[in-house]
Image (cartoon, rainbow, N blue to C red):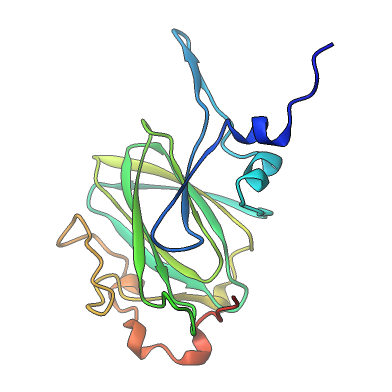
Length: 198
Protein backbone atom coordinates (compact mmCIF):
# COMPACT_ATOMS: atom_id res chain seq x y z
CA UNK A 1 0.00 0.00 0.00
CA UNK A 2 1.39 3.37 -1.00
CA UNK A 3 1.96 5.80 1.86
CA UNK A 4 0.16 9.16 1.73
CA UNK A 5 2.09 12.11 0.37
CA UNK A 6 3.80 14.28 2.95
CA UNK A 7 2.96 18.00 3.09
CA UNK A 8 6.42 18.72 1.66
CA UNK A 9 5.77 16.43 -1.34
CA UNK A 10 2.42 18.04 -1.96
CA UNK A 11 3.94 21.52 -1.69
CA UNK A 12 6.60 20.58 -4.24
CA UNK A 13 3.87 20.73 -6.87
CA UNK A 14 3.74 24.49 -6.30
CA UNK A 15 6.64 26.87 -6.71
CA UNK A 16 6.75 30.08 -4.67
CA UNK A 17 8.86 32.93 -6.05
CA UNK A 18 9.34 35.74 -3.55
CA UNK A 19 9.51 39.30 -4.83
CA UNK A 20 11.51 42.21 -3.44
CA UNK A 21 8.37 43.31 -1.58
CA UNK A 22 7.99 41.04 1.48
CA UNK A 23 4.66 39.21 1.50
CA UNK A 24 4.00 39.51 -2.23
CA UNK A 25 4.94 36.42 -4.18
CA UNK A 26 4.45 34.67 -7.50
CA UNK A 27 3.00 31.16 -7.53
CA UNK A 28 3.80 28.71 -10.32
CA UNK A 29 1.50 25.68 -10.44
CA UNK A 30 2.43 22.19 -11.51
CA UNK A 31 0.92 21.84 -14.99
CA UNK A 32 0.08 18.41 -16.38
CA UNK A 33 -0.44 18.32 -20.13
CA UNK A 34 -0.52 16.08 -23.16
CA UNK A 35 -1.86 16.20 -26.71
CA UNK A 36 -5.40 16.73 -25.39
CA UNK A 37 -4.59 19.87 -23.39
CA UNK A 38 -3.55 20.57 -19.80
CA UNK A 39 -4.68 20.53 -16.17
CA UNK A 40 -3.51 22.38 -13.08
CA UNK A 41 -4.89 23.36 -9.69
CA UNK A 42 -5.47 27.11 -9.56
CA UNK A 43 -5.97 26.90 -5.80
CA UNK A 44 -5.64 24.26 -3.11
CA UNK A 45 -5.82 25.58 0.46
CA UNK A 46 -3.56 22.89 1.95
CA UNK A 47 -0.87 23.21 -0.72
CA UNK A 48 -0.90 27.02 -0.62
CA UNK A 49 -0.62 26.93 3.18
CA UNK A 50 2.43 24.68 2.83
CA UNK A 51 4.21 27.44 0.88
CA UNK A 52 3.18 30.12 3.36
CA UNK A 53 -0.04 31.47 1.88
CA UNK A 54 -2.86 31.10 4.39
CA UNK A 55 -5.91 32.54 2.70
CA UNK A 56 -9.64 32.03 2.84
CA UNK A 57 -11.33 33.38 -0.27
CA UNK A 58 -14.90 34.67 -0.13
CA UNK A 59 -15.29 36.32 -3.54
CA UNK A 60 -14.03 35.54 -7.03
CA UNK A 61 -14.12 37.99 -9.96
CA UNK A 62 -13.42 37.92 -13.69
CA UNK A 63 -12.75 40.95 -15.89
CA UNK A 64 -11.95 41.29 -19.58
CA UNK A 65 -10.03 44.26 -20.95
CA UNK A 66 -8.49 45.33 -24.23
CA UNK A 67 -4.89 46.30 -24.90
CA UNK A 68 -3.78 49.46 -23.11
CA UNK A 69 -6.43 49.31 -20.38
CA UNK A 70 -5.03 50.03 -16.91
CA UNK A 71 -7.08 49.26 -13.82
CA UNK A 72 -5.82 50.56 -10.49
CA UNK A 73 -4.32 51.23 -8.15
CA UNK A 74 -7.13 49.88 -5.96
CA UNK A 75 -7.48 48.85 -2.33
CA UNK A 76 -10.07 48.63 0.47
CA UNK A 77 -9.80 50.21 3.89
CA UNK A 78 -11.22 49.23 6.23
CA UNK A 79 -12.12 45.63 5.36
CA UNK A 80 -8.90 45.05 3.34
CA UNK A 81 -8.68 42.40 0.64
CA UNK A 82 -5.89 39.95 -0.02
CA UNK A 83 -5.92 38.95 -3.69
CA UNK A 84 -4.73 35.95 -5.66
CA UNK A 85 -4.69 37.08 -9.29
CA UNK A 86 -4.04 35.39 -12.61
CA UNK A 87 -4.79 35.45 -16.32
CA UNK A 88 -6.86 32.96 -18.31
CA UNK A 89 -6.35 34.67 -21.65
CA UNK A 90 -3.76 37.20 -22.81
CA UNK A 91 -1.01 39.01 -20.89
CA UNK A 92 -1.01 41.62 -18.14
CA UNK A 93 1.62 43.55 -16.21
CA UNK A 94 0.48 43.27 -12.60
CA UNK A 95 1.57 45.65 -9.83
CA UNK A 96 1.38 45.66 -6.03
CA UNK A 97 2.23 48.70 -3.88
CA UNK A 98 2.83 48.70 -0.13
CA UNK A 99 0.58 51.45 1.28
CA UNK A 100 0.55 50.27 4.90
CA UNK A 101 1.30 53.21 7.18
CA UNK A 102 4.37 52.47 9.30
CA UNK A 103 5.65 49.75 6.98
CA UNK A 104 9.43 49.70 6.33
CA UNK A 105 8.62 49.24 2.62
CA UNK A 106 5.89 51.92 2.48
CA UNK A 107 5.55 53.33 -1.04
CA UNK A 108 7.55 50.57 -2.69
CA UNK A 109 6.14 48.49 -5.53
CA UNK A 110 6.78 45.20 -7.28
CA UNK A 111 5.39 43.68 -10.45
CA UNK A 112 4.83 40.39 -12.25
CA UNK A 113 4.06 39.50 -15.84
CA UNK A 114 1.06 37.19 -15.80
CA UNK A 115 0.12 35.35 -18.98
CA UNK A 116 -2.15 32.55 -20.09
CA UNK A 117 0.99 30.74 -21.21
CA UNK A 118 3.04 30.94 -18.01
CA UNK A 119 -0.04 30.31 -15.80
CA UNK A 120 1.58 32.23 -12.97
CA UNK A 121 -0.49 33.73 -10.16
CA UNK A 122 0.40 36.71 -8.01
CA UNK A 123 -0.42 36.76 -4.29
CA UNK A 124 -1.01 40.26 -2.93
CA UNK A 125 -1.68 40.32 0.82
CA UNK A 126 -4.06 42.63 2.62
CA UNK A 127 -2.76 46.18 2.92
CA UNK A 128 -1.37 46.53 -0.58
CA UNK A 129 -2.79 48.53 -3.49
CA UNK A 130 -3.17 46.60 -6.73
CA UNK A 131 -3.34 47.44 -10.40
CA UNK A 132 -2.64 45.95 -13.82
CA UNK A 133 -2.39 46.93 -17.45
CA UNK A 134 -3.08 44.78 -20.50
CA UNK A 135 -0.21 44.29 -22.93
CA UNK A 136 -1.85 41.75 -25.28
CA UNK A 137 -4.75 42.47 -27.65
CA UNK A 138 -7.08 41.60 -24.79
CA UNK A 139 -6.93 39.75 -21.48
CA UNK A 140 -9.27 37.83 -19.21
CA UNK A 141 -8.21 38.48 -15.63
CA UNK A 142 -9.28 36.37 -12.64
CA UNK A 143 -8.90 37.26 -8.99
CA UNK A 144 -9.95 35.73 -5.70
CA UNK A 145 -10.40 37.96 -2.67
CA UNK A 146 -10.23 37.37 1.08
CA UNK A 147 -12.99 39.94 1.76
CA UNK A 148 -16.09 40.85 -0.20
CA UNK A 149 -16.25 44.12 -2.12
CA UNK A 150 -17.25 46.99 0.16
CA UNK A 151 -18.29 50.10 -1.77
CA UNK A 152 -17.89 52.35 1.28
CA UNK A 153 -14.30 51.13 1.77
CA UNK A 154 -13.34 51.27 -1.93
CA UNK A 155 -10.25 53.46 -2.39
CA UNK A 156 -7.38 54.07 -4.76
CA UNK A 157 -4.05 55.75 -5.51
CA UNK A 158 -3.16 57.48 -8.78
CA UNK A 159 -1.57 55.07 -11.23
CA UNK A 160 1.17 57.51 -12.30
CA UNK A 161 2.04 58.92 -8.86
CA UNK A 162 5.60 60.27 -9.22
CA UNK A 163 6.34 59.27 -5.61
CA UNK A 164 5.77 55.64 -6.56
CA UNK A 165 7.50 55.87 -9.97
CA UNK A 166 5.97 52.65 -11.28
CA UNK A 167 7.54 51.55 -14.55
CA UNK A 168 4.32 50.83 -16.45
CA UNK A 169 4.74 49.40 -19.97
CA UNK A 170 2.16 51.87 -21.34
CA UNK A 171 2.46 55.66 -21.44
CA UNK A 172 -1.14 56.67 -22.18
CA UNK A 173 -3.45 53.95 -20.84
CA UNK A 174 -7.21 53.71 -21.09
CA UNK A 175 -8.54 54.57 -17.61
CA UNK A 176 -11.87 54.69 -15.83
CA UNK A 177 -13.10 58.11 -14.73
CA UNK A 178 -12.51 57.03 -11.13
CA UNK A 179 -8.91 56.02 -11.74
CA UNK A 180 -8.13 59.25 -13.61
CA UNK A 181 -8.81 61.33 -10.49
CA UNK A 182 -7.57 58.97 -7.75
CA UNK A 183 -5.46 60.83 -5.16
CA UNK A 184 -1.69 60.68 -5.02
CA UNK A 185 -0.38 58.66 -2.09
CA UNK A 186 0.80 61.82 -0.29
CA UNK A 187 -2.77 63.19 -0.46
CA UNK A 188 -4.38 60.21 1.28
CA UNK A 189 -5.14 60.87 4.95
CA UNK A 190 -3.24 58.58 7.31
CA UNK A 191 -6.48 57.17 8.68
CA UNK A 192 -7.51 56.15 5.17
CA UNK A 193 -4.49 53.86 4.74
CA UNK A 194 -4.11 50.28 5.96
CA UNK A 195 -2.12 49.76 9.14
CA UNK A 196 1.14 47.83 9.23
CA UNK A 197 1.48 45.07 11.79
CA UNK A 198 4.88 43.30 11.96
